[in-house]
Structures are given as C-alpha cells and as structure tokens.
Image (tube, rainbow, N blue to C red; front, side, top):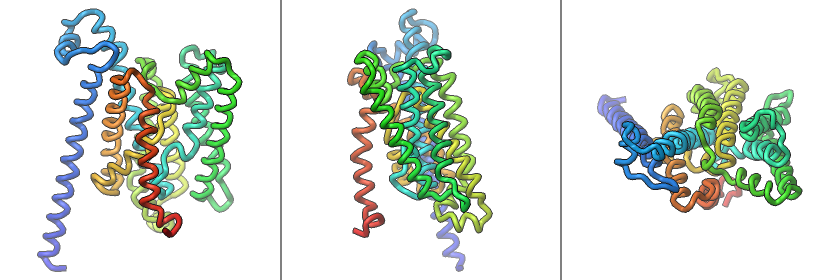
Length: 347
C-alpha cells in the first residue's frame, strides 16, 4: 500500500475521530442543559433566575421544596431511565442482529408490568410498604429473564432464535395475565394499574433515585463491559467464536445487564416503550456501528430524548410519557420494517 493511500486513510480516520468527539461533547452539553431546563417545567413555572436563587439559598421555602424534593429527583430519574433503555436497546439489537429488537422483545417489560399490577391490585409485597410496587416490578422483570433463558437452553447451547421466540411467548403470557387483572379489579384500582402500565415520572422521588438509579447504573456497566464482544457478535457468532469470544458468557452478561436496566426503569416510571428501538438507530446514523463509541453516545442521546419527552408531557398537563413515546415509536417501527422488508420477505 502506497504512502499516499496510508496518509489518506489516516486523515479520514482522524476526521472521523474528531467528528465523534465533537458529537459526544455536544451530547454531554445538551444533557446538562436539558437537566437544568427540565427543572423549570411543572405545574408551577419558574424562571431561570428563580432556579438560580433557590440553588444559592435565596429562594422561598416553596420553591426550595418543589426544586429539591420534586424536580431534581424526577430529572435524575428521567436521565437514568432514558440512558438505561437506550443502551439496553443497543445490546438487544447487536445480540439478536435484528434492527427491530428492543428490551421489550424478551418480554421483560410485560413481566415487570404484571408484577406491578399484582402489587397495585392485590397488595402483593405490601410488607415492603411504598416500595412494594417497584420491587415487584423489578422482581418479575428478573423472573421473566430467567424464564426466557431457561426455556431457550438446549444441550447444543442457547440459539438466538429460540431465545427470541421464548421472549415473545413469555411476554404474551404476562401481558395476558395483566389484562386479566385489569378485567377483574375494581374501577378505582384499575386506574392505578393502567396508569402504571402507561409509564410516567410524576411519582418520582428521592426514594426512586435510591432504589432505581443504582440498578440501572449496574446494568449499563455490565453492557458497556461487553463493547468489544458486541462488535464481534454483530459480525456473526461463528466469527466471534473463532476470535476467542465466549458467546455464552457474553450473552448472559448482556441479558442480566438488560434486565437490570429495564427492571430499574420500570421500577421508577412504569412501562415506557420504543426508547430502546429508536435511540440505537439514531446513534448508529451519527457515529457508526462501533459499540465502543455507540454505547457512550446512546447513553446521552437516550437521556436527552427522555428529558425532551418528559418536558413535553409536563407542558401538556402531565400526560403519561409512555403514551408519547408510543406515538413516536410506532411510526418509527413501521419505517424500519419497510426499510428492511427485503431482508425479511425478499421484497
């Protein structure tokens, strides 16, 4: 290879690295700005000066209470949930080599929703007090993961197709159970169950931060640790094996990490769909398929996306954020499906 060709490749790579660095810095800046902007939204509007005065201890007692006890923990939860669901989507799409894969494809959201419904409707887990609903959601999310993985194990390994089908089956089963609960409970209880399944940050508090955010952080770290393996698995499992990747260990790490992210997210805000579908595609278009970079960019893009959705929902009168993400996600899903239809049906 000639020196000119090598120099051209080197310059191209340098430009790409500079572009990635610029995008990352911009996303970090937008996340920080979005966090402070989100503190201004709510039933009581505050100006930036009001917020600054309150942070410096010069505001009123009411503004301090709203900011410290309601809006700051809510914004932290919004960022954590957005980042967790986004990185879980990156992991699922790489693991299944399917552009339409998302955390819900394993039925994790359905399992968590059923656990929360049990707690709200029948008081299951009431011994944990106010933590009963999020803990039940998290417990059933992990139980769903164990069921799906257990059903897909064969003596020849754990085929991705069988894992996918097991997730669809278990998810449908838990969705049916949740629908049955909604059918038999009293109308006043039904409202709470439905509200949880729609997804909302309106009840987020410091308690939500303490039990939900650390869980998501652990899940994010577990997925991020597999960034090199994800790059190789995306090329094909056989190639990954020949390069020394332990497929089974990596798959278990990714599944547990995804379950922790989804379980923590559902424990905080209920079921919020399509974030894990939309964000990985947007980030892949920005920085390419290298998971070492894609994971970092997805974390901040997911956080920005969720901050934006939550601010819009608050502005519109505290509508559930899951409704808005579904309205955006469903058309995006159809777009991806049509774009990739030749791969599925040969069209």
